[in-house]
Image (tube, rainbow, N blue to C red; front, side, top):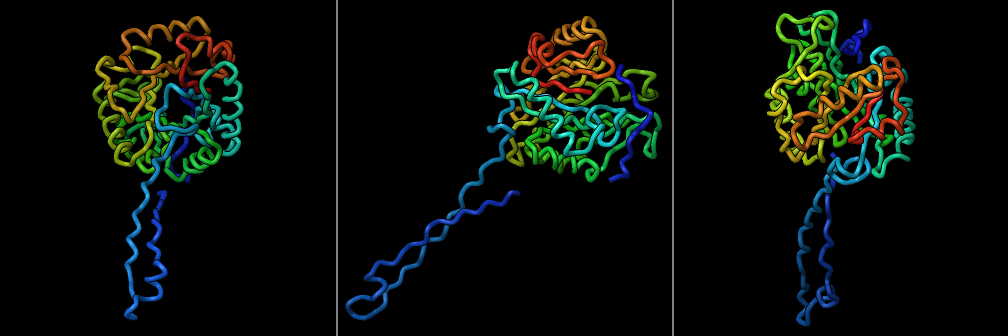
Amino acid sequence: MRRLSTAIATAACAALLLTGCGDGGSESQEQATGTQNGTAASSAAPEASPSPTQPPELIGGGTELFPDRRFVALYGHPGTPGLGALGEQGPEESAQRAIELAKQYQPFSEEKVIPAFEIIATTASSEPGPDGSYSSVSSVDHLTPYIEAAEKNGVYVVLDLQPGHSDFLSQAKIYEDLLKRPNVGLALDPEWRLAPGQVHMQQIGSVTAEEINETTDWLAKLTAENNLPQKAVILHQFSMSMIQNRENIKTEHPELELILHADGHGTPDLKMETWGVLQQGLPEDIHMAWKNFYDEDTPTFTPEQTYDIEPKPWFVSYQ
């Protein structure tokens, strides 16, 4: 089980419009000087037709995530180093660190390796909080500097949800405006989805396929209505009990690409065992992802070792 930091961040801190213009009609010399009987001729210029708006694209071009790109991400919460590598530096520095990580992977990939952030947007808490959810909700203003730094530097973003006694759909809707951006996806972390009576670190949470489907139905609709490119949806898992009835997860939304993130840490043998178990009975069209832990893995896999794993992970994150 990943450790829950005692430092829990709070939520208190902080169209493209394209118009087309057609060429107006030009007057002939005869129209400009008048007809033989001296009556000035006139013609009305045709109304300009708007040019179609070009749909936004993903980093690296196009509107489909795979199979033309892979991702390498920093994971964590802004300003909280104990929750992962993303929180160890500011927005711009995080972007540059993610870019350097992606460069380390590029020699071992035929596909373009895109740098990414996996930002913990709602954080599992050791205290119930005002709403009793055991989940601290970060404000949009608190996350926006990292989103903007990512957009500036060509870094993809995934917003990670740890809902406690809340639910994934309710928390995803909090970040609707951020999810309307073309290079922002979503991650669901069932370890921190508590059942009634459960408390973080005493039990491992879980989620039903039905709740996942409710969330992805909403996100697919949001993506389609806003003419956005495909979005990544990451499902974290290190134990089969974390996702109930996994075989019932919907994978047919063309607006989304589902990714199963093997979230365990430890020795290489333990990590590979988890990797193999999680693929058993996995629904088709769900891509595999891998996490490297700087502190908890013994040792941390190198980029070459990570990409030697079969199947080669489509998304790698560093915590």
